[in-house]
Amino acid sequence: MTTAPRACIIGHPVKHSRSPLIHGFWLETLGLPGSYGREDVAPDAAEAFIRDLAGSGYVGGNVTMPHKEAAFRAVARRTARAEALGAVNTVWYRDGELWGDNTDIVGFLANLDEGAPGWDAKLKKAVVLGAGGASVAIVAGLIERGAERILVANRTVERAEELSARFGSAVQGRPWPPSPDDLAGADLLVNTTSRGMGGKDDLDLDLSPLPAHAVVTDAVYVPLRTGLLRDAAARGLRTVDGLGMLLHQAVPGFEHWFGRRPAVTPDLRRLIEADL
Image 1: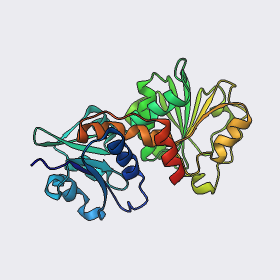
Image 2: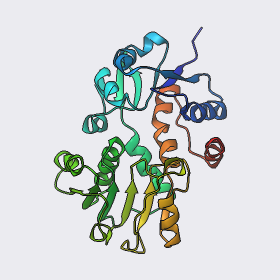
Image 3: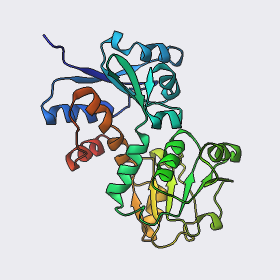
Image 4: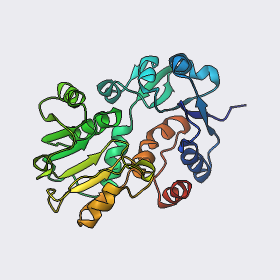
């Protein structure tokens, strides 16, 4: 008898992850056998746990903070994107080998494509707030879409400048907060920091230098409408919340584990919004 495939989210802590809700919805909607659970794994045990994921009965899983670099080390094979980012958030078995990918780029780009169609048609200048793990994937995605100039503003400028060393001269580090000159002419503004999460410590930026066609997006999705997005909407700018990035980045993993490519639908979004 064939055992139904099992996948999981691996992190520490992981109890608040909405990935089980997302994948459970797809399993039910598509009528597929399988399950998706949570594994709270301490940092010093993460690499070994991921390396022997099959030993715990899993066909693969998602990896969240703080284990993405441990997953990068644990897998036997990596996609080009994972290699470029030095972090893995999705693992699966192929021909007996554990593969790793980073789908944050996919999630970020698909979210913008859905929420602001044509956002990259004339993408010359982008401003990214923050230089943490999320910003690495986002900068890579912007380069993939042809951004000519990416300014990364961070409290520690040296961290922002590390992205320039990684991705080339198109990426430039800037001090915090970004200056009016930094924002002037920007086609896209992206917040990758935790500012505004839970409705606290909202970003206090003067968005008036942004041109009228600019798109503003926030990686934070609790709440869906952060202070940054409210301020941008008040200026008449197009805005995209961060929930779609979470939903779209989950698609490739599900396809690897359960054999069908799911869709990000309004029903799924309503389900997750109700849980926020």
